[in-house]
Length: 411
Figure 1 (cartoon, rainbow, N blue to C red):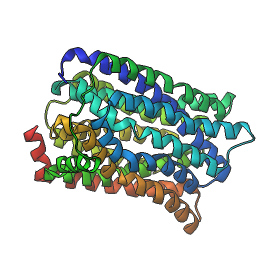
Figure 2: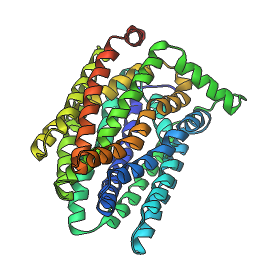
Figure 3: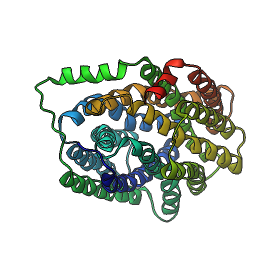
């Protein structure tokens, strides 16, 4: 595949589809979070839904990465997006017949997530197919903007829609947003040739090659390990922010607050999309994660929506910088032909922290609330503040590692 700047419009077409899909997914995520908390009053129940929405993507990311290097990446994106709508459709049908039980919601999000697993490695590898090395940083900023849409646009829109309708409308909109993504991938598929791998190697051999690419440099291994620790703290924040706010505010206030907080991602994402980062990736990564940890610690201090919005804005503003640096350091240290399977493995290993967070944070918040006779929201606040402090310490540790700084010199 010949990378050249003329391919950037094709990337933008894919990006636009992902932006729309991200908004739809955010509507469903917000709506289900509010629905489950209103039905159960438990942070653990909300965390369970989040876990089951995430676990299939994690477990299937490795084989999906291998498939992305062996088959047409755009076709895999189309299949993943199309069939992931089935899980949301199942939840919608259940709600149209009198309401969805917790187990039915869990089944639906599990199905949707399982098919979505095909998307991420193929999408990331397609970015490498389309763009030049000089465009990676700019593209990463744009990808951050698309990812931020589920936090920036979706909460406010969902809160407004829930004030006049119910969650079924959110699910219908989400199902409709899958079509632009599929259409965009189909158009790009026609315009660029598939990088077919002329090889007879087995699936396991492909996986081994991806493993060698990931473990070939100590810095990448360390970066993945530290990333797993960091995703644990970030997953805790994402899981417990909703019950923290819903403990003293309604869904409309929650939606507005989440949108204001996510404006931080929009601001920094736009900055990165326009300028990118030229150097100092490891330093910027460490500083951004330290500030993000401070934002988490401040987020849970008081039941004051203004303070929450300020610290939430700070937290989200730092994420695109961290993601941009992580993406660049890894992408430029792995051969192009191994990108799909490498990203599948990296996604699996680095995101194990999310599984820990989703499995433990909700129950921990409920446990602290019961132990100290406080509300579930304040129990969530305690867990968030502790996680923020630990994230700050992790950022300091990361910057001290020579093997990670060596990745920047190579790239």
